[in-house]
Structure formats: C-alpha cells, structure tokens
Image 1 (cartoon, rainbow, N blue to C red):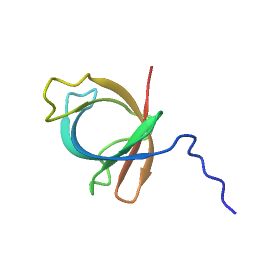
Image 2: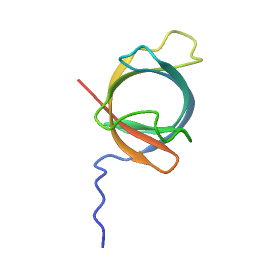
Image 3: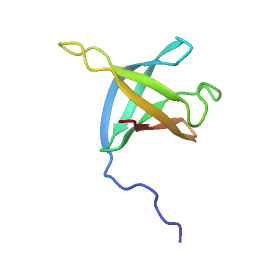
Image 4: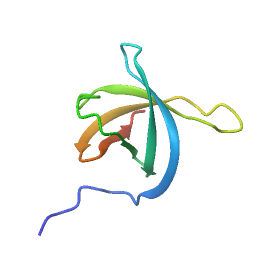
Length: 87
C-alpha cells in the first residue's frame, strides 16, 4: 500500500491565477484545488517550472486585488504542478 504524503484536505477551487517567476516571466493558469499548505495548478506545459523554484501567485478576476503569495514548486504531475505556500 502506498502512503499518502498529503497532510491537508484539498478543496476544489476553479479559478485563474497569475504566476510570476523570478525572471519576471508570468503565466495565466487554472487553479484546480487548494489546501492549508498549497495549491495545484493545471497546465499541459511540461517544462514550465523547476522543482524547488519559488514563484508568486495572485488569484485573478476578484472584486478587489487578491494578495500576492509566495509559493514553492514541490511536485510535477500529469496535468500540472503542486505548489506549497512559503512563509
């Protein structure tokens, strides 16, 4: 049996996020779910991010500007990337 690494419950959350890399490249991606420690971003681009790369994300299309959050890429999976909140 495989042991789940996930510590927190994921909540489905469909929305667009702006992801900005340290080299100032930015991408508009779909957010699939969110948990207390991170998010999953949907993309078909296989080489978009490096594992351990720190990026900033901001949820788009809200009534007010959403905060910009620092996150670290921790997992590449079929269909996207898992990111963890950085304090």
